[in-house]
Image 1 (cartoon, rainbow, N blue to C red):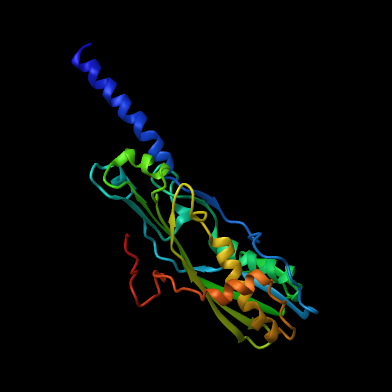
Image 2 (cartoon, rainbow, N blue to C red):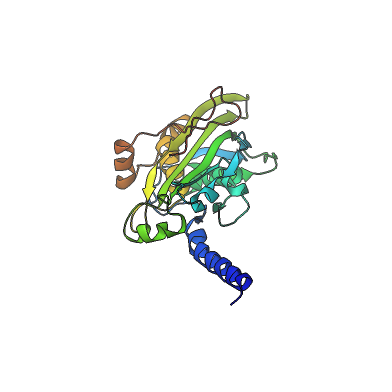
Length: 275
């Protein structure tokens, strides 16, 4: 065998070894609502109002960076990503694959929850700013953050880390975070009659055999939204729907965590660090 042929053989073998690791470094998910985690509950009677929910105004930062190729480098401990707009990444071996349209999806989920709980006579989504004449109130808001931060640990042995993962060592970490500011406008006089900030963030160690799904936005959002809708019901003149037992227990056990990145309007810079 010539030296040239041997070199090509080694290159092909290296590519073949890299392929499984590249696949493992990609996480996949999509937004759904309701999350399926909590049972449906309903108000005693709907408020005599019609609420139009506008598409959220996007105030997120623009950082979308992947440092995952460092995971391939010999002696490097791993790689990491920082996606403030995870739905805008170009799918690949070193980026997330998360299908969502947060400004629309979150607004539509509020409509779905108002209807699901029978809190109001009617609820509609307004994606273009047009509000039907029948609407008595307008709910609008700002999306401050909706991020995915991930790490992958390769323990300095590059592609061979998959062996350690199979033996039970952690693959890495995942962080999800969101923050939305909402306000309800009474169309009769233009007053803001209700304001609310919904936020949460988490951190998990991930492994082949443990750790939650990489993307937890659906149930994190549903948990915090339903927690706050009781106050909205009172403002609208009805009684909020009772919370399911598992949802109530989760709220009591875990207070919402403030995300570390709060968008372009925040006076504080992003404090998220790779770990």
